[in-house]
Length: 435
Image 1 (cartoon, rainbow, N blue to C red):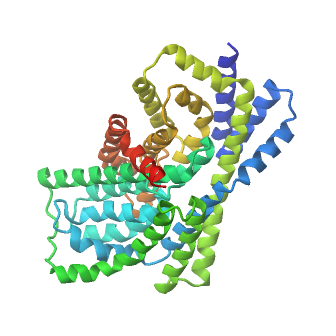
Image 2 (image 1 turned 45 degrees about the horizontal axis):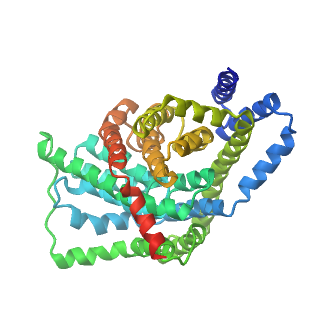
C-alpha cells in the first residue's frame, strides 16, 4: 500500500510541475525533494548538493559536451553539401535513387555528430531542395529524413548512449560499439523500404540522373574523405584502445576545428556560435541528469524500485513479456517526453527490473535507444517532426503520416534485436577479447 501511495505522489508532483512549464531537470529535483521530505529523515539540502556534485563531476560525463561541440562545429561547415556530392553518384542508380542519400547521409553524419536534431537539420537543408528539384515523392523524402535522422541516437558517438551509460554506470565505449551494428542494420532496413516503395509506387517518376563514369565517381568521392577521416579518428581511437570515449571526444573536437578551418568555414563568429550552442545543449542535458540522479537517490530511500522489481518478479513475466511491456511503456512515454528525458526519468525504476530478469545492460541500452528513437517522430512532442515542419512548412499531420512507415520499421527492429541479441553484443565482446 505504501508503494502505491508513493507512486501516486511521485507521478502527481511530476506531472504537476511539468504541466506548469517547469524544466524537466527542475521537475525531477522537485519530485525528489518531496519524496525525501516525506519518506526520510535525512537533510534534503545536503543530499541534493552531494548528489549534484557527484553527478556533475563525473569524468565520463565530460564526453557529452565535447561530442555536442563537435557536432555544432560540423553543423556550421559545408559538410552536408560535400557529402551529397560524394554520395549521389554511387546511390543514384540504386532502386529508390537519390532518396538513399537521406539515409546514408544521416548515417554518416550521425557517426560524427551524436545528435538527432543536428543530423536532421544538416542533412535536411541539403537534401530536401535537391530531391524536390528532381521530383521525388514528397512524403518519402520527408519520411526517410525523419526516420534516418534518429540514427544519431544510436550510431556512436551517441548522446543518448552516453546519458544511459552514466545513468546505469556502464562503459560508454562498450555501449558505443554495441550501437554500431544495430544502427547499420536499421539504416539498411530503411533503404530496403525505399527500394520496395520505388518498385511498387504508382507516383514514382523522378528525374533520372545522367550516368557518370567510374573515374568521375571516384573523383567525386574525394568530398567524403574529410568526414571519413574524422570517423576513423574518433571511432578508431576507441576501437584500438588508444582513447576512452572522453578522449575520443576531444580528438573529435580538434578534428572538427581542423575540418572547418580547411573548408574555410571557421571564423570567430562560427567558433563562438558553436561553443554557445554546445554550452546551452550541454547545460540542459546536465540539469536533467543531476535531477534524475537526485530522484534516483530519493526513490532508493523509499524502496520503490526494489518493490516494483519484486512485484514484476512475482508476476513471473518472461523476458519477452517484460520487454513488450517496456516497449509499450516507452512508446507512450515518448509521446510526451524526448528520448534523453525518458531514459533518465525511468532508469531508477527500470534498471532493477532489468537486472532481476537477467537482461544484459549493454544490450538493454541499445533496446532502449531504438525505442526512444521513436519518440523523435511520435506526436505530439516528436522533436524531429517540429524541425521538419519548420524546414518544409507542411502541417504536422502530413509529416506524421510521412514518418509512420519509419516508425513501424523501428518497431520491427526491436523484434530483430530480441531475436538476434548478438547484433548488439558481438562487436563489444569481440573487441574486449582482442584487447
